[in-house]
Amino acid sequence: MDKEITGQEQRAGTQVQQGQAGQPPRKQPQSKQGRPGQDRSKDRRTRDLWAAAAGLVAVGTAVVLGELTASLVSPTVSPVTAVGGAVIDAVPPGVKEWVISVFGTADKLALLGGMALVIAALAALSGVLEVRRRFAGVAVIAVFGAVGLVAVLSRADLTANAIPVPVLVALVGIALLRWLIRKLETWLPDPNGAPDGATDGEPAAATVPPEPDPSETRAAAQPVPVVAPAAETSPPETAAAARAAEPPAGEVGPARRRFLLALGGTAAVAAVAGVLASTLRGAAAVVSDVRSKLAIPTAASPAPPIPAGAEIRLDGLGPLVTPNKDFYRIDTALRVPLVDPAQWTLKVTGLVEREIELDFATLLAKPLTERHVTIACVSNEVGGDLIGNAKWLGWPVRELLAMAGPKPGADMVLSRSTDGWTAGTPLEALTDSRDALLVVGMNGEPLPLEHGFPVRMIVPGLYGYVSATKWVTELKVTRYADDVAYWTPRGWSERGPIKTSSRIDVPQDGRSVTAGTVVFGGVAWDQHTGIGTVELRVNRGDWKQAELAPGISKDTWYQWKLALPLTPGRYEVQVRATDLEGVPQVEESAPVAPSGATGFHTVRVDVKS
Image (cartoon, rainbow, N blue to C red):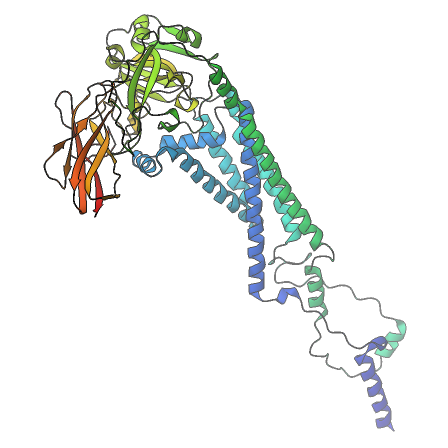
């Protein structure tokens, strides 16, 4: 009897365990805390990519807004151009020469492109760091802003308005980064993070069970055997943690949309600001308009006519006079200085009997001289194209210096540009009979903006780094012992006289030509001395004299040509020049630093049958 009663109780207890309230046992959901590590790694990579995008947009927008602000309050100095200028100032001469040799007159574009890549990399890094560790990305942007501030403070053309701009860039970048990262964290929480109220490795806080029903209490007093739970049933703590780890239903979609809208909207602001900054660079447009309406005076001393036969007609040989649009530009100005002629003045200071200040209208009223002069950059490699010939209109510098009266002992004039760049020119070269000019016109029109508008210097016989100051605003009469020009402490010689040089333009190196009579042509120069002869040799054989066209003057380059009978084969052709004083071009190869390259220009041609 007892056994029968006990069996009934056991069956009843089993039914209670299998399904309270008549419900079958439910399968508990698996917790995301237990998902494979590779899934968490994939989620983290996705989060990092979006964080990098947020960093790019935040920093990019801040930089563009900084450029926009600078265009309003400080047109000549902005954080980007200030940093670029500081890079140019600090870069070793060897690196500078490598950049020019590779990129030529596109060196500034290459620098700006390189800066853009560095800024983009740091911006992306700031986003990733910020989403991983709060304020780590903020620190990157703060350092970025500090670098911009130091660079701005180092510029010679600094104005007080320019100082707050890099600070503004940093603050805007930080604010945008924090805003975007917060929205990203709402959409994509840290995949390695813990549920609310728990820490890594700990279960979520257990919920307090409800008070038992009295009838259930009485039933529980009966001896009921313990029955093991089904194998697939999860502990209630794990299920609670899984539910806590998942975002609330309906939240993921809106959070994602909010982040993407914020990201896209910020990028759109950057685009609009970029357009506005470009438009507000309208200072350039204003100055360009002033330039276009400027009527330059007729020269009191016109340029002598170009001699007949001075220009050789040969395919591939450039014009005798270089068009303004093709004239090389090498300087340290990332942004072309914008100088209103009405505001321009030139001061003569230093070791003079009387200081002078000259305005643009007074300069134009002087008896102007017009001359053809070839100028060259000291960075011009053997056979290079950093050289050009133009017709310049200006007032002789010697006349201005005569008015000021240099004192005994002075031997150098330190000319200064509006952007702070300086050149040290021998006083003798500015006071002798050569046509050293304060130039206002180039090839029959006002100076182009990029070539020094409204006024620059030209000195025949000297490399540009010691003479050809653009946007000139001061001539300081001084001594080499007392003052140092921009390039001197950077490894270049104090005085830069032009070296006798020659170049083969036709045919170009590595080209193939047809056997028979092959015409070679090119240019030779030795400004303020002049060229006497040009010769070619083939495969290191005997020198053959070329036909030398009459030069415009000894201050310009000369064109030459020579026809050579060549049979099929590969040839090495070299050129050399001798000046009017009988001094031949230096054969020994030397780099451009510290005082200009030397060596014979050599081309190799394949002659085909």
